[in-house]
Length: 276
Length: 117
Image (cartoon, rainbow over all chains, first blue to last red; front, side):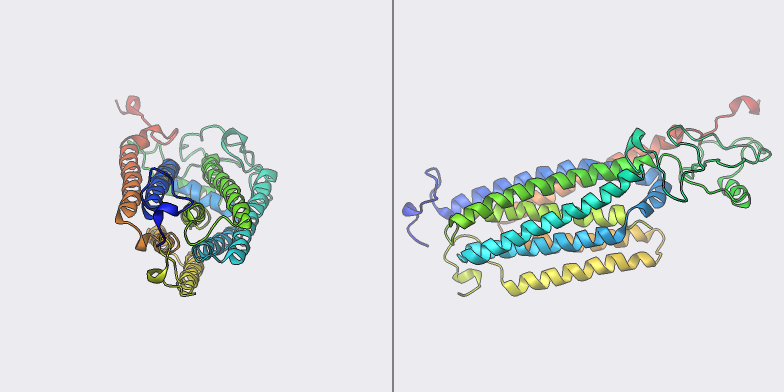
């Protein structure tokens, strides 16, 4: 290592470049930990709703295209590779390669958001939105059914077989107390009645899934946008020739952030797109 | 220029290019597997299989792309602590909701005490 006293990027309150680098890295890891906790809240919401209303998730995931999601996963993984490689290029002082790799990473981020735009647009057109905005109008789904912003009707007695358009909540949760014999029919039996009547059924409160979907992918998308801003910043600096074996810290730290964005998506993809 | 970290004059560890590409290949294969297994039904294990694959992928990214394997152990400890806190949060919240959820789903907890008398 060259004489630390003359390292141009060494701040006065650090003794060696190594110490400065380690301190910065510790700070970035602490920041990443707060990011994990931030997303942790949303993963917790996901876990609770999926545990209590599995039928909503099984029903609603069919509106997500797993090939778009898979393509986006591949794009993000490849951009993670170009980012990790860019860090290597910066460490070895390969300026031209660093610029190319950062540009490729940026291109990957744009591709990801482009596909995300196509997906969001499709949801928007079909009214598959969050909360009270949920108003589905997809061919073969929903048109003949009543809106679902209300609570589902209570389990009907067997005698009054439901006419068309009845919505049943198929919750995994058992009723708290069984009713007296004859007043309440079992969920499975109700299911049979509906199938016999040829009623196309859909679980209640599907908007919960889309609220969670838009919150999680939206927050992730915002992180992609911020990551793109950070990559542009180090791209400009690398064109200026700021980075070399002695000083590549910003590239490394932006890289760590970018990999975290990738990490979150690695979990979001199977949790949202691949339910079965 | 030699690619290995030990001969690198600056700070930090330099990843070998070959390792980076192998990690990407493994990640892509795992992505293919996680999509492909959705055509098989393991019942309750579907979620476990999907999450196990995701954890393996995440570990590869953390260890190699994020250099944690060659990093100060303290950074790894920060990551593990944050993950443990998230796990604690989810487990406790799930257990809590399990105890009252069956009473709050409308129309699904018929209370017909009056009729039984």
